[in-house]
Length: 429
Image (tube, rainbow, N blue to C red; front, top):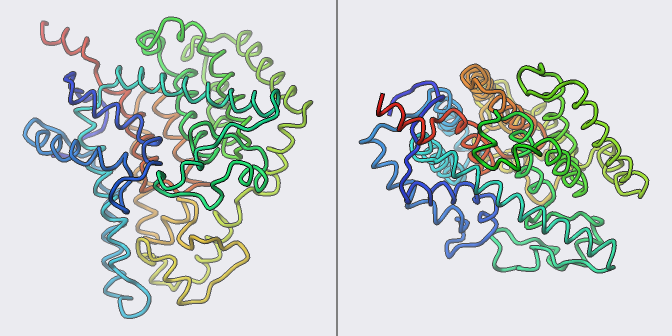
């Protein structure tokens, strides 16, 4: 494996690669399902043998590890081992770090094998199919609640079948606690929004030939479909939907017409349609709840403010190397850093702050290097937009070492892959 810019690679067209691709595309959904092993979700369990076999095969055939990705994943591990020598007698338990390190190495390997075995065109079709199903379920939830007066059972009703079951498993109890916040087939609205947001970016910013490869009908209606997906995301009431959708639409309206192929008049029409849709939601009082919740900070306290409080209590050497992966809770308990924002999971903070807390300035510098490097390497506008979505998600959610980052990154980088048709043409030149 060699460190090269992550731009063009050759995805395999065989059945094994397509099954691997399907499993990656559906991972955010299958991750919710429990496996026989308490530390692995079903989505991860079924991918483990694929990643292992493809990695062994790929080392022979020429998979590669981009330098920026290696820095992103491996520097925090190195910083944690430094912390171990400094604080192993105080609060740091290296055994707690190993669980995160294992996931880091797994998703690192998953992304590496994706450079050769992720079939871009097939992935886009699978992704669009999943989006259609998710949005159909979401519409059914909305229609049943507002038109028929009953609530479709939520995913949490599955209870023991879930990888991380919610304490509010009953549909009525859940909606009573949080208000009517539909999430389709996900456990939380934020997860639904994270999954759908890249598709909005693809519809608005992907090259026409890419969308036509997906479907000519979709290509012709891409802006209308993007508006529809945006409105449906907002109807989940997730505050993240405002940030994610807003970022994509800002990029769309700022880039030149020559890039998107959409003239100013059409942009105004589509913007007006989006605004009218939102006004209809305000008229019904529905979106007032979203903005009110966002204005109150939603989960800003535990995600951001609590993280800032932890940083203020770190020692100078911890400012450099952090407190160690998966040792935030141990650090907080040892230093009695309890705040009014604490929740059950004392490890939880937004990814940008978590990176600094767990691996210090050296880890945060690695993160900045990764984003700057990738923004320069990824040439297509849709790739840059998905990177922006990752940055936005890092600012309010904890996704850096999870399946979400792997999903976003693999999906975004795949647009630099050459499809099978292009490869066939080059073989015969």
